[in-house]
Amino acid sequence: MGKVAFATAVTCAAAACAVTALVVRQRMQSSVRWASVDAVMRELEERCATPVGKLRQLADAMAVEMHAGLAAEGGSKLKMLISYVDNLPTGDEEGLFYALDLGGTNFRVLRVQLGGKEGRIVRQEFEEVSIPPHLMIGGSDELFDFIASALARFIASEGEDFHLPVGRQRELGFTFSFPVRQISIGSGTLVKWTKGFNIDGTVGEDVVGELSRAMERQGLNMRVSALVNDTIGTLAGGRYHDKDVVAAVILGTGTNAAYVERVKAIPKWQGLLPKSGETVINMEWGNFRSSHLPITEYDRALDDVSLNPGEQIYEKLVSGMYLGEIFRRVLLRLAQEAALFGETVPAKLEVPFSLRTPIMSAMHHDKSPDLTVVDTKLNEVLGILNTSLQTRKMVVQICDIIAKRSARLAAAGIVGIVKKVSRARDNARELPRMVIAMDGGLYEHYKIFSESVQSTIKEILGEEASASVVIKMANDGSGIGAALLAASHSHYLELEQSL
Ligand code: ADP
Ligand code: MG
Image 1 (cartoon, protein in one colour):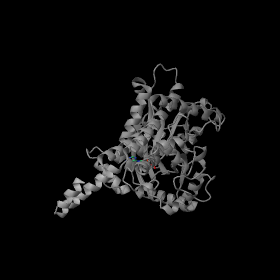
Image 2 (image 1 turned 30 degrees about the vertical axis):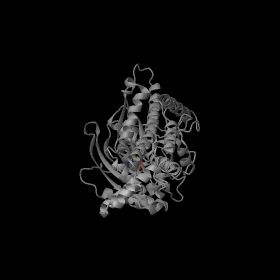
Image 3 (image 1 turned 180 degrees about the vertical axis):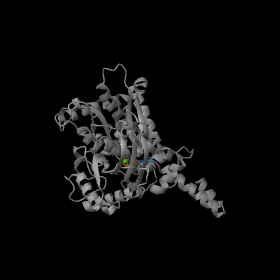
Image 4 (image 1 turned 90 degrees about the vertical axis):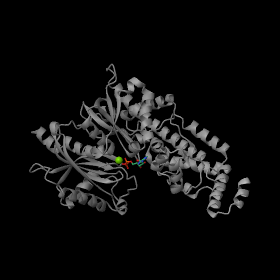
């Protein structure tokens, strides 16, 4: 009341405006039902809690599920797929090799000249091409012709620093990050399209066949020597640089992991594999499920309306595609039940996926005393004005709860793999150095997230044991990795060995 009386006494128009804004802000603040906010927040914190005891149970559950998935077909929610990668790159690879990466945010082509043990990666070049949306839902020939023609242009632009021995066919590693039933290292049939792709008549078809026919149509003389997904590619790329790489983890739009397993530990493929040695398993860990996972009402509601309800539960708690959406759902409830953003619920807040993870990350990292980044993003993205500092602090706290739960669950998964791998080497008196090759925009750009993954691994394993576990960022490991796998599975190596 006092302020309103004061406003009438002011004659300067600008000052009057400022005072009116102040009044609006005060009204909005006072309308927030803080007792309801506290109740929702307390419940969120409780349901998202990941005490270290729970994380240890989850790590054990991951190791148990890995075991079960290897023992029998359908033995676990983890598919534990064979990759047929029996020769990981060693560093001795030589020659010119290519990669094609389809299934991430962009489609890429890459060439690399390998110089063997001494020369290593002599030279590499890549090009990024975005796929026109109409080709993502069109016919097979249209999509694969587009890809093959981009590849043909890339090869036509090749400089003299790249050398192909006379009489040799070019060899390609194809990173195809969609569900594939692999038949050999160089072929596999498509199980289904995901990530917005839907191409007629290709499910059940040999993916390499489709690409090879398109390359022929483009007059390209090229052989696909390795078909892999991004996780396997990242593992191969990591191994080339560091022989202690035992696994790869992707934390991007989605999440997955792959690791190196001894052939004799894989009962379900006895007969399909060589009798000894190591191979790479694609875990498809996004589908991990356990009663120990902290699942909230927000996660359940998100899952219910998702394209794949009941599936990929771990991925929906952890990966970049979903964190922003969980965050939005919490804000929406607070807007509805506690008038956090005033008496009317902001319309944009009701739109699914209107808050993406990079926005959440930007708010979470806001270091300014007044939380101006939070203020700006709320305004730009959701049309929310005039929040109090107390409200903005609340928003950051929600980011923190959701991101840390995700990071801590990812850490538990990694420890699960470490346990599975080190159990196989249990003769060793101390843990050997184990490197995890990491890729993905979530881990790369969300600093609070990646720091939390690392500190949580320490918390679960203890200072001493965790010192043997190293996470190495493998930027674009999947592209170069596929080219390296084409090299280590080169047709010409086979020919030389058979002579
Ligand atoms: P993809 O997973 O499609 O291959 P990336 O590995 O580059 O692509 O990951 C992209 C994902 O990473 C985005 O969908 C988003 O969830 C997350 N991401 C990208 N930038 C950021 C950021 N600045 N902060 C948090 N997450 C981010
Ligand atoms: Mg990717």
